[in-house]
Image (cartoon, rainbow, N blue to C red; front, top):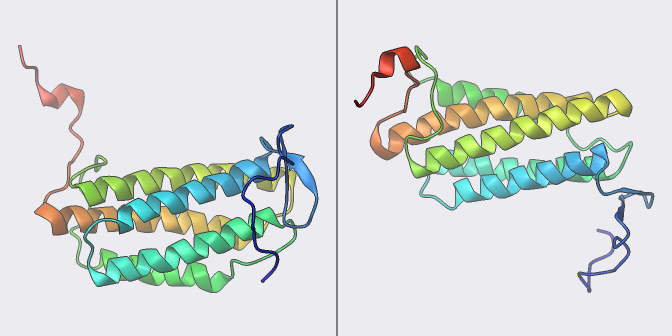
Length: 187
């Protein structure tokens, strides 16, 4: 492993730029920094899900995901590096199939909620989608690992399915969307 931080502040970014893993400097609002920053935010939100009571299979999957998200952040911080292999995407697909197997088919749109852990997982899903959008924008400007795009796309699907699993595990309910015409009024 490379250098360890012995001092957290360096003052090198006070002018609005930051160092990448390869030593180059870019503006803090660059697409690359926004991409790995949003992946870091996603990792933090997955940590919020992990702070809840979870079944071991969910906990193990999300813990592995946190490590992979850290890999993805490292990949994005070092232009030209590839740390997300196709096998990570394959594993997400296997997890998706396993978690989705016992869920009833979707007949309605699901609202973010149902339980605290499910709501946190939906929040992770939406941050994952934002990270994916930023990575799509970055891919238009620079070369990136295509597996990373696939990874975020699949991960957002997995987080949706896990949110459904968590809503059912916590209290057996998912909140389904009802169109305004069908909700009625309180007057």
